[in-house]
Length: 321
Image (cartoon, rainbow, N blue to C red; front, top):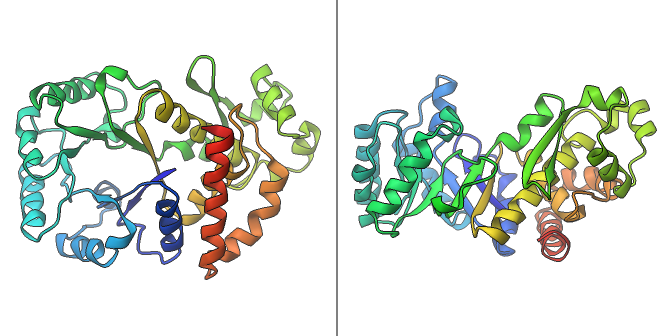
């Protein structure tokens, strides 16, 4: 598992044992300025505050992204230059208004850079075109991260080294069950309301059966099994993205980064890693039984959190990857 953590949310001390646990077990972490989130909420991220955050938590992150300004390449490049002069080595951000050839200046400091626009533009054709153009102009030297860009499937010719997304949580927020289709290599989702009416597709029925999920119990116990993050919707939805992460790593050498606003959100994905299987099923009962203990551990039992994460990585490598 890899994590992308926004400065907007990263000051919560509960993140520290999670980030440490991920890195100790071979996962990677990236810090993001959270400029997009802040702008959407009418807040401002200062360069001084962000740089202080990076320096004080340098032991928690493998990489960090420069402070960009939405749709303003000049200000974005200015912030990048200031961070470099301060001795930092950020991933430069190729903003929507920046031409591919203008982005090559970033490679003078770091071969890793981010192409922005995935959140705003979805899978519009201009974004893959810009990524391809940067690869060509850099003669393959650029190691590109698709910022908020995670279509299914990812075109192999783009040669993306990594991508991130927070949309793995979206189906849960909108009452949908998402599953990774192993055969067609795409994400499928169904309205939970349809499942509750008994309109369960064969793919869902098989996952329920392999996970020892009693459909009748689900329909009669909505407060535990169908509502909130730690639920059947949450666990199986998170596992579908864990399976997709494994596919990208196996087949394309592309690292997927989970982005989330809270430690509890990430624990959902970590629990899916710990109790999941490659076929998309998981030991839901064991996951539910572990909920209270791991949530309490976040309040100060850092050793327990790190052991939990280690077991999650062990299961991921043995039964999912």
